[in-house]
Length: 269
Ligand SMILES: [Mn+2]
Image 1: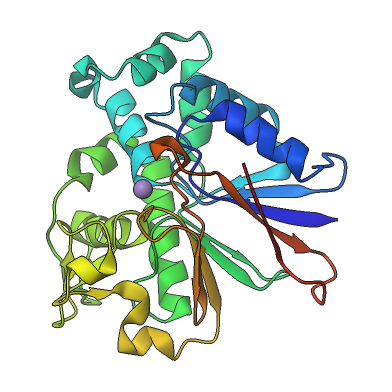
Image 2 (image 1 turned 180 degrees about the horizontal axis):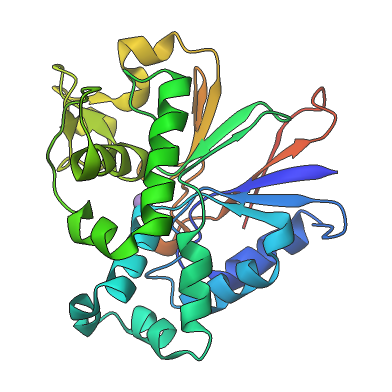
């Protein structure tokens, strides 16, 4: 048995199917974990959601910012007027409510103890312990599952951009969503930066979250997507799998066999 961790699909359904053929995916034994951003821009978002939904017994999903944006538009009707034709196709599908209900119940952080990996869309705020990150992820997940309208009404915004354990309610959820699904760089003062995206070298005054000093000491490995400018990157204890298929790049799978002594393998289409 093997676990395949898949980078940002973003509606590139044909590529996902081609990747599964390439890795010789065996649905009777193997498992998939998605790093988030299943939907948007690739043109086949509905097909992607339907396939993962139909195969949910062998798939685990961490939600990305694009998935949350789709859900926000579904739960906050006023946002549905967008011209995003891929999202419109989903909203008009007969199985839409079912798909959205399923998507809303996915994780924002997966800790797979068997393969000893943490999977998250953007990253883990470097001043959080793993225990804290899991606690904040649980807080977000239960808020999203139980009060989706309130959750999405309050999800957007760049404040607070500093962590403080006395944060509560919507502020606490917003900080956690922003760090788990949107974060790339931090300011030197520990604050999240939301504007910078692209190559690390273009922002000498900012620090990528995984190079932040407290993070470097962590003992666990994090696998993430979201940052296509990094491409396939392994550094210290992080691996980025967003290789920008939707931007003309590749879709990537990281294979981890059940026998953890086997070498991890990368597959791309
Ligand atoms: Mn993303």
